[in-house]
Every structure is written in C-alpha cells, then in structure tokens.
Image 1 (cartoon, rainbow, N blue to C red):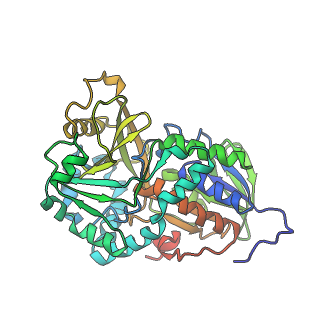
Image 2: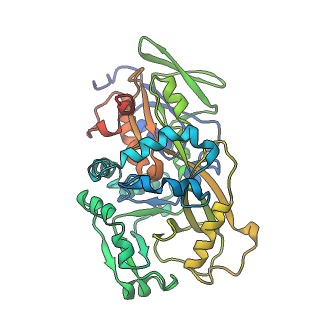
Image 3: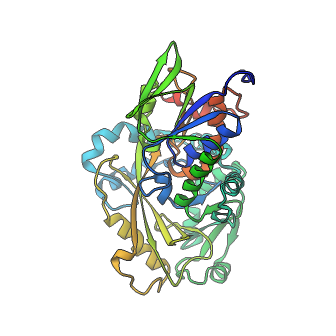
Length: 430
C-alpha cells in the first residue's frame, strides 16, 4: 500500500452502517483526512441497533470463542430446550446447520481456541482506553468507566469447571484477582449468598449506555465533516476491480472506497463484493429494571445463569441468551423473562414488584461468524471494499480498534498488525 498523495483530492469512503464499528471507522477515517459518507437508513444508537441493547462490557479479556472442545456433546440439549442459554429453533435448523458445524469445529481443540484467543486479544487489549478517548472526543466521557468486571461462581469448583477458558486467557496476558467468600460478601453485599467465589478482572471497562454512546459517536463524526446518506446499501458498482459507487435504495453514491459495517445484515453486501461469509445472528435478549433498590457494585457475569448484570444510566440491565433463529423470526419473550427471574434471584428485594410494563425487554442480533473472529480486511472483488463486521459478543469492545484498522485499509495505508486471522477470505480457503 502506498501513502496517499497530499496533492490529490481526499479519498472518499462510504461507511455502511452506524453501529459502534461504523461510527468508530468514520471517526478514524476523518482523522486520516478522508472524506466520509455514512450510509444508514435509521438513527444511530436506536433500539433497532445491536449497539443499543448490549451488555455494555468493554471486556478486554473476552478472547474465548463461543465453542470449546466437547461442545458437540451439548447439541442435543440446544435442540431439546428452547429456553436454554443457547438454543436452536427447530424450523431454522436446516439453514443453520452448516454454520453450526463450522462453529463446533472452530473450538475442537485447545490449540484452535488458543489461536483465536491471541487474535482477539490484539483486537481488545486496550479497549477501555480507546473508548475513553472516543467518548471524550464525542462529549460523553461519563459513559465509559474502567472499574473492572466480576465473574461470580457458586463455588471454587464451579470456577474450575471453566479452567480451560481461564488458562487460555492467562496465556494471552490477562490477569485477575481471586475473591474468596468473605471478600465477595464485603464488596458485593446485595449479592445472593449462594455465590461464594469470584474473579475480578481490573483491566476491563464498561459503558453506561451503549445506545446513547453510539448516537454521540455518530453526531461527533458528522460534526467533524462526515455526511449522511439516509438509505440502505444494496450493492456496489465495480469496474476493473475498482469501486466506482455504492448502490443504495435512493440511487448510486459515487465513492473511492467502502467499508461494510452493517452488523448481522452484512452478509449480502459481502457477497456482492465477491466474498461470501458464513454470518449468523446470535439473537440476544436483555431486561432492564428502571429503579431497583438493590444491585451489584461492579458489573458482573453469573456463571450459573450465563448472564451479565450491569448498571446503565436508565436502570439495572441483565443481558444474555443465545438463540439461533435468523433475523426475521418473532421474539420469544420467555427468554427475557428467564433473565429477569435469574436477576431477581441474584438480588433479593431487587425491586418492589414493578409493573410488568416498567421492565424493559429487548432483542438484538449479534453478527457472528462460526469461528468467533470478525472479518476485517479487503474483499475478494476489490481492495476498495473493506469488510469490518462479524464481531459476535465483542462488537462494542472491539469497535474502536476495528475502526482504526478499517479506516487505514480504506485509505490505502498499512496496518501495523497482522490481520491474517481476521481475513474475510479465510472461509473460501476451506
């Protein structure tokens, strides 16, 4: 890649999508002196967006892929229990099966898991600091905190059941502090006493309102010169391997480069750029209690319920669940109710029986590849079309670093990181 000629007009990049990754990419592209147009039909940070309702973790230690060795043994349970922490809806199984087989294969051995972890660590290692910078620039520094994250267990034996994951994390440089029962009682007095052991990861951070944060990033990008093209992207006009325009529902947008950051709806655009990607929606739910009287001191994950509990500006949020059912299936709000029941079991007297309508329930779509790694790199059809999606459970945390890498790729500049593990072409080589 060559350094752009300063005498030439600035390269015009279309950033498709205004989620966390798209907004970070736009800001970093502007920082490089590019002309930027955001292509998005809906308001950034709205309730339709995955960024709006996630758990708010900036977990620099979330380096473990979804599937681990032996995960295949759990497949019957996923199919049999429609309300389990990970469930596959039967009618969707034929379509999801190729993705699920790749998903299981990606974590077949500890060595494979370790390779994925090292790649994700490079993406996430300084996520809290990167987001603190972006939030400060966008005028919302109070939305990003770094007080560490807590994993709570009913016993030390339950923690040892996750030994492989923590062993892999340690090899990537993650450090943590163990809390015994007395320490946990002292520091988390509202937590149910069934939890007797915890792991505190001090380096990790949190976002107090992901939707508001992403909306602020989008406003900041526009204040710095990004234009908005309010339409849905549908494809690309390519001539001789070079991008001439992004095709949208309101016509062509002439540009020199494009970055696909459309989350779970990115697959069709990637295919239009000659790069089919096995992308699936890991549907996740949340509940949010507006005025609870009890709750955690630190954001925490409960091992027994596989849910994350975190204070947001609007109340106490519990997020989790993985449901494989596609983009268009109706929500199963029983899954959100499970989160609410578990949340109330963690904090007795959580709220004085709030009205049912007062508890917010939400469904979003995590854009997930089967190997747990996002696609970050040029498309097969043209180096002018860059893919930057598929972050699964680490979209918010990984968005800041992804934005830096994707912006440099769109600018034709070198990236000071080996992106081979994230190559969008990796699925075509098999």
